[in-house]
Length: 505
Image (tube, rainbow, N blue to C red; front, side):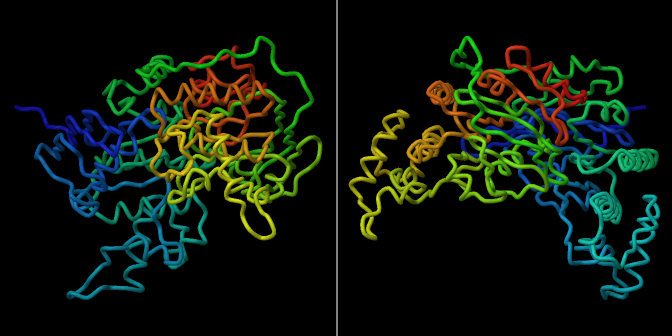
C-alpha cells in the first residue's frame, strides 16, 4: 500500500523582487496533524514563503501539491478554499466590526440565498469561540475593544470558520503573556489532534521545543535543513544553520582603547508601554553603541523615542546633561540628534528632489537671506558634504531617486553632517545596500565616530552590530538582557541571548 502523501508539498519555490531573490528553490513538506516550525533570521525568506502559501504572492517557479495534487494558489481566497488559513503577526481584523462580523468576513452565513446576520452569525461565531476554549468572548463586541490575545483568538476562529486543514501562525506569541501562550499551545494541540496541520513561525527556540514536531530552517532564501526533529535538535545546531553566511563583512578597525569621555547622549529609565521596558544607556563622543535583538524586541522603537518621534511613558533623554523635551523631534534636532531611519525612501528622502535639496533640507535656515534661499550657498554646502562622504555620482543636482541604495544612505548621512549633528541614530543602515557599498558605509560610520560623533546603531544583522559597534546591548522582548564590549561577544552568543533570554548583566 502506497504511503499517504504529505498534506502540503512545496518544491523548488522561487520568488524575486526588483534586485532581490527572496526565495531560491525552497522545499517544504507538511504532514497532517503536525506542527511544522519554520525558523530563520530576519530576511531569510519566511514571510515571503508563507505569502506564497497564502496565495498573496505568486512564485516565479516551483510546484505546490495539496494532498498529492498539484495546485495553483492564485489568491488568498483560492488558498482558503483549499483549507489553508494564515494568521499574520499583524492581525488583519477590522476593529470597528464585531467579533461575529470579523469571524465571517467575506463568507457570511447564508440561508435561502440571503446573507444571515444578527443572531445566527453570533451563534455560529460563539460555537467557534467555545471550540477554542474562549466562550467568554462576546460575539457582539467590537474587535477594537478586545485585548491582543483575544484578537488572536478571533483570528483563529475566522480560520476555523472555513474547512481549514492547515493554519500558518506567524509569531503568534509575540504579544502574549505566559498564561496566554499556554492557552495558545493548548489550542494548537487540540487542532493537531483533529488532524489540522500547523506551520508555526517563531524566533523563540524554547517554544519550538515545546510545541514543534519538525523544523525547517531558512537562510538567505534557501532551506538549509528540512524535517529536523524539533525537540531533540541541539540549539547550537539550529543557530549554526540560521547564521551560516555567504556574505563577507569587511569592518574598519576599532580604536585600541574604548572612548572614555563625558557621555554626550544619556538615556535614563526610558520606556514605552508594550514596546520596551525602562532603559538606561550612555554614548560617548567617538563611541558606537549597538542594539542587537529580533523583530519585536523594541530596537527601532527605542531609537524613535530617543529622537522624539515617539513620546515615552517614563524616563528622559539628555544631551550634554541637558534633558530634551519628550516627544519632540524639533528639540532633538536642535540639541544635535540626527536619525537615519530604517525606511529611508519613505521616512527620510524626498525622492523626486535633488541630492542638494535632500542634503540641505534640515539646515535651510543657514541659506535664508531676507526671506529668500541663497541657492549658491545651498549648492556649495551640499557639494562639500557629498565630497566628504564620496557620494557617487558627485553631482548634487541629480535626483536622489537615481542613486543606488548605498549612495541614498550617504545622502541621509550628509544631511546630518551639514546640520552639525553630534549624535547619529542609525536604524538598519545597510538595508537594501549591496555588499561593496556596505564596506564603504561601515568605513564612513567608523570615521565619523573617530572624529567625535556619538553613534547609536540598530541592525538585524548581528555580524554588523558586532563588527561595527564598540559596545553592545542585547535586547529580548523589550528588555536589555546583556551588555558587553563587542569584542567579548560572538554571533552564536548573541542569538542564544535573544532567543533564550538571560538575566541582565
